[in-house]
Structure formats: C-alpha cells, structure tokens
Length: 289
Length: 251
Image (cartoon, rainbow over all chains, first blue to last red; front, top):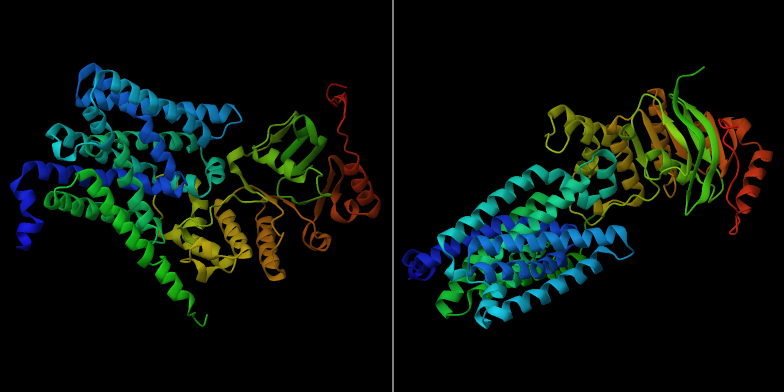
C-alpha cells in the first residue's frame, strides 16, 4: 500500500522518473542560487529575469519549433542581454538597478508574448510560461543536470567572494579585484538556471524552486552552509511530494510542486527556529545570562 | 630624515569640484602614529577616502612609498555590513585573512589560532560563535579591529574608530592601536577627544580644508591653531570661483 502510493508511480512510468530526476537536479542547482539571491536582497530580481528570458525562448521556438538547443540558447541570450543592459543603465544614469531592470524585463516580456502569438498557439505560450515537467525527454533532463553540475562547481569556486559580496561589498572591493567578476558570474548563473528550469516548470514557475525554499530555510538556519543544505532538502522534498500529488489527484504538475514548496514555506514561517510561533514562545521566557 | 610612508603633494580632494581638502602638502613618516583633527566638514574623512583610493584627487597626488593601495587597511566611519546576514563573528573576523587565503584557500590550524588570538585581543573570545546580528555597536567595532589586526597591513587608516564606544572599549581599541605603533606600522586616525589624542598620539595633523598645522601633538593643538581651524571651515562659499592657486612645483 505504502509502496504503491509513494514509489509505484516512479517505478512504473519512465516520464515520472525523468520528471523526478529533472526536479532534483533543479533543486540542487537553482535552489542555492536562490539562497544567494535572497541574501543579496535580490529575491525579486529572479522573477524579473524569468520574464526577461521569454522573448529569447520564443524566438528560438519560432525559428526551430520546440527545439531544446534553440530555445535554451535564445533564452540565455535574452536573459544576459537584459541583465547587462540593466546593469549598464544603472551605472551610467540616475536610474537605479531595480528600476532599469523592471523597464527592460517588461519590454522583454511584451516582446515575448507578441512573438509567440504571431506564430504559435495558446498552448505553446502555456508551455513556455508553465513548462511541461511530465514531458521532459532525456535530452532535457541531461541539460538540466549539466546546468546543475556546472552551477555547483561555479558556486564552490565563487563561494567566498560571493558571500563577501553579499555581506560587505566595500570590503571585498578593498581587498580584491574579484567583485565585478563575481557579480557578473552570479547573474549568468541566475540566467542559465532559469533557462534550465523553464523546460521543466516554465519561466514563471521555475523561480518558485529558486526563491521559496531559500525563504523557508531562513526560518531554520543561522549560518550559510546550513541554510544551503536545508533549502536544497526542502526543494527536493517539495518536488517529490508535488509530483506525487499531481499524479494521484490528476492536477497540473508545475503548480503542484511550487504549491508544495509553498506549504513547506508556510510551515517554516510558523514553526521554524526563527518562525512566528517559536519567536513568540521564546519572547515569553528568557535566560539568566 | 625619516623614511616616508605617505606623501600628500599639493593634494586637492572634493565633491562636484568643491574642494573638501585644499592644496594639502604633508608627508607621513613610516611607523608614525598620527591623529587627524579638525571641525566637522574639515575634510578628514575625505582625506582618508583619498588615501584608500575610493576618491580620486581633483588635483595633486598621494604618493605611497613601499606599499600598494591594497596594502592599506581602511576602516570607514560607517561600515556597510548587512547585520542581518547569517554569519558568525569568527567568520567575519577571518575575512581579514583574505590576502593570505584568496578566494579558495582553507583556514589552516595556525590561521584559526590567529583568528582566535585576534578575537581575544579585543575581548571577544567568547563571542566567536555568535551571529554578527547579536553584537552591539561597540562589540562590532571590536570585531572590526580584530579583523584589521589579521590584515597585517603596513598602513592602517581609521575614520572615527572611537566614536560611540564606551570608555572600556575605547581603551581596548587604543591598546590595539599602540601595539600597531610598536610594530612600526603607520597609523592615521580621525579623532575628536583631545584628551585621548594628547595621551596616545605623538603627532597630530590639524585640518580645516587647508592644512593648519602638522607636527608634535602639543604644538599642533595650541589654542591659536584651533581657532584658525574653526574660522576656516565657516568660510565656505557657494559661489566660489575657480581656484587659481599655482602648485609649488609649477611656481
């Protein structure tokens, strides 16, 4: 009975196995990126970037149909272009980075919707926006896994400067020349993870696997390595239960996954070590010293 | 003649073409312990930013002898640290070892010991595992001094390091500063408490946009100099014309 409920869907159907592997790879790569986005107070930047990659993916789709390499490349190029353009405008004008990023991603999003509607159908747009995790082929799973592996290696190499860039950027600039490199590499990692994620969950939902586990983990962890470990675990748990829910209740998979991680966020918000209930309980007592 | 660490050659620093430090000419000996004194708005912080390299001169130059920009350890007046960041006091202080470790190196056993010693020297030995968010203002300043110690810099510049710390913390930090002096490091510190300066700083540079006096503390801080310093900062002119003062070398 238990076996049937928890494991049979994956042992019986290869599309469920591919979906599970894809989601786990996504959790390993995209979630740590989300943790750093949150620590840099850029949680909504991920959202903006997710919209920004749409016209690139749409252009790839128009030229080559539902082709994995074309859509991936197009999305990555569009994301990078928006990130660099926003960075350039904020450095050389009075406009701050958040405002210039918002301007570019809105233009980008409108362009993307326009591109899809000229040639594609509503179904294509739905695929781009919300993904098709149950339709992942081997090629797509391989792409997601490669992106996750590269992300983990890059994060290992950039870990210390990235932490310092979040904690105290002026200090990093005073002791090292790595600050600009770190910033741009990090933006590139955000973009490729979103591009990897949109094949599975779509441009809108993939950001959920990035930011939600990070925000939930912040209620449990007080140092960065624990934060990363908890965030990844929550993402894996949410993906797995989300896939199960979607299978048994016959509901859309992407939203089931994000909603399950969302439920873990609500639980953490209430019961986590620095959550609402625990903090309230602690405030009623105190230690002697 | 002493070995020189820093030379200000006809140095003008400022914002929007308004000078905050005007035609400063002075040289700092290697191993000197110098207090920088002046009224608010006299250009003290601006001078330190110029030395640290975060502000480029409008005219003149800063010459460094036997050290590079990155060898200078600078403690700004307001440190832009995200206090809610989940990191321990130990980890914050160990970032002072960046020049030794780079981006990838791990902490060796001796380096861990040195971080522990630096924390003990500022009285924070029991705070190593605490999150930085739980430190008070004075405790954070102690942690930043511990980090400065680890940087092993030949030149250390401090912008109001003793502002808003209590007497005991001030004494601990002054002890650290005196130890740097004993180790032949060049230390420049912006300070306001004349009593502290008389007791701990052999030399003082009195600044009020222009250089008023620079030399032994007792001579520099005499009342006539202090009065002149106050009068000069009050003479700020919004409609100022372009400065035509010629540099000594050109003259």
